[in-house]
Image 1 (cartoon, rainbow, N blue to C red):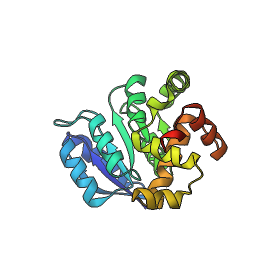
Image 2: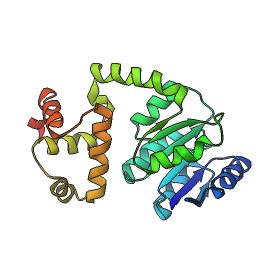
Image 3: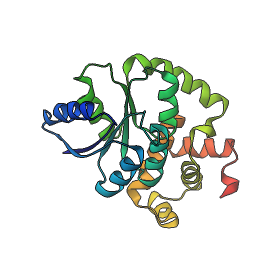
Image 4: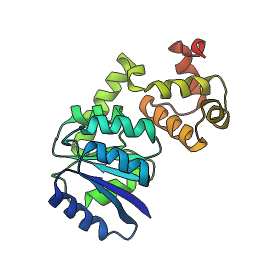
Length: 212
């Protein structure tokens, strides 16, 4: 069962999402929030599998919420649901750690599938934005790939390149094995790396190993 927290400041829209999710046999809503601060506090308390997050919140916007959630709860999957049909916003959110970005104007049948995709560890972007984002991300990787990574992701990448196991890294950093696996998977996806050899070559090329 996929446990979902809905964060949106419009009561009526939250009610519609709750009704849609209730029609899915493999999903349930475990909480609702109407502000950014409430969202962060509730996520830490109930630990949903997926946070369904509006970009426009009345106190802390969705970008800041995403940054705080992915830093504090890296295993949680953030799926941004927004009115902004913008590849710039989508790229910014995915760089902040969001697992997906879906536009509110999309067909209702697409939302449950997007939730399943991000809950399963994959990324989801509204299809009409995905091609533009792929092009921009490839260009961005060539220009300054380290800007795609958080400080923790760079730290994990460097230790992997030195041959440390995921379990060893978890013990060194005081994290769970699952959390380190999440950082590893996210980093490899962002940089289009396929295996440890790719990680090592990347770390050497960008002078990361000397820092560890």
